[in-house]
Length: 190
Image (tube, rainbow, N blue to C red):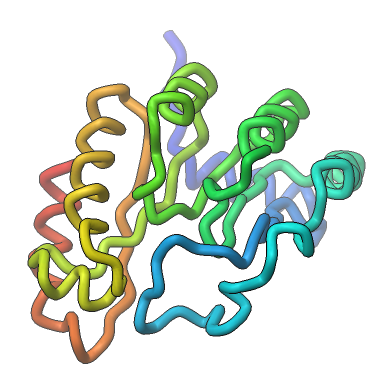
């Protein structure tokens, strides 16, 4: 009978064996974002034209270098990484290399094509920020009408398709009262 091993224990053993060798990397695939969150650090960078972003070949070269250097975990972030037309190609290339992948996404752009991709070749998890569970406040923070409903609909779809995700938040004066609700929401999602 095999013994169940906790993820944290495996990661700790890998880090000890790596002896100060980096194991985790993150690539910001874009500065563009479909939301305009009050607390976002991107500011005017959010308006960076798509043509000024790293192209697929450049990103593939970075992934190859990370692979050759022994990295195991690879995170994709942005802006909103799902805005990239070639996200599927980037994700698939990194998965074929064997990376353990996380994606930081606001989850509002998930569509059937992306859900099929993630369902067929699951990430380690999607990292999804939830800033409030009261619609008006959530959309005051995201500054995009309809974003809250879209987020909740897509979280439901992720659960139905058994695509792993984690809920996170940013504590701000504006949403302090929402933190217990967000914690309860995350707990109910398990």
